[in-house]
Amino acid sequence: MDLIGQSLGLALTARDFPVTGFAPRLEMAQEAQKRGAVRQVKWNMVQAVAGADLTLVCLPLAEQREALDAVAQDFRAGSAVVCVAPLLAAPLEWAAQVLPPDRHFIALHPLTNPARPEENASSLTPSADLFKHGQWAMALSATCGSEALQLVNGLANVAGASPYFVDPVEHDGLMGGASALPVLLARALMGAATGSPGWAEMRKLADHGFATATAALDDDQALAALWHNRKNALRYLDAAQAEMKALRDKLAAEDPADLAKVLDDAAERRATWLADSARGDWEVPERPAPALPTSGETIKRFLVGGLFDRRGKKE
Image 1: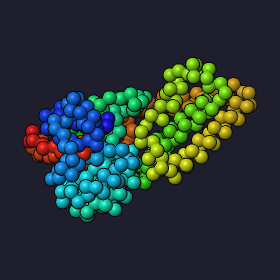
Image 2: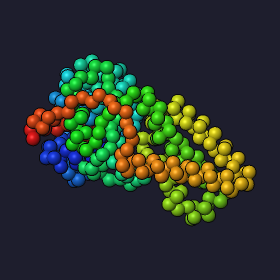
Image 3: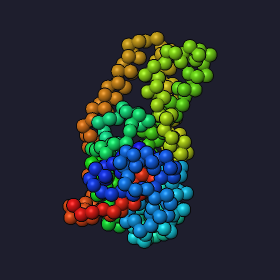
Image 4: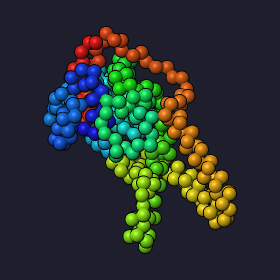
């Protein structure tokens, strides 16, 4: 199970919810058990989802459609199915294609703790507080009911996160700049550097700054996210090319004061973003939120990690 699945499992087991999980590879399941993210593992995906009230699919984006198709008829009628992914439109489309109409589907993009925006995802380890104070962007299928929303909101409560609704097209459009563009720029930087005749010596001088600037290449979902969001990625890439052209003109003009002004402006915007992120101060427009489960209600059978089955108990 991946970073997200194990972190959700740790948040649940910390609240004494017994968690049973499924992982496509034995070593992933063993790692999750060793960390305490799951109590029990199912070795068959069909067995893992059978009878569950809530299924969380935390597989890589490239594998989600196939997984949904494989167990579409095995989800309990009336149950909630949630795909956790960096994009929302594609999972919604896949669900509409393969899931029976009496399954309630939610596409979920959970954002991690906003106090740690500079941490590279590859350096993070599973943690029960990974999503604490973070926001969870959600998009719903047309037939998604209130009970399914209550279960997902209950999970967000356990993780310490704040869920909100967003238009999937709007969300994915913004991800073209927030996620796709960093990958493309990192690839361009890596190509320019390693393709240089001086790379043999340059690599000795490259340090933290170079590693940070190319860290987006460590994202194992980068290809799938780029491909399924390519129109938005192209739009932001065009904007980035215009910015690079403007920067090139500043350098060629040999006016250090003008160049300094441009760099200072960008640094100020970044500092503002980091400060807002640390406070979680996003001034999110008010959206009607579904009612959360009460303390006396049972949040049953969470599927966390790859696909998880959890039997909840009353608080």
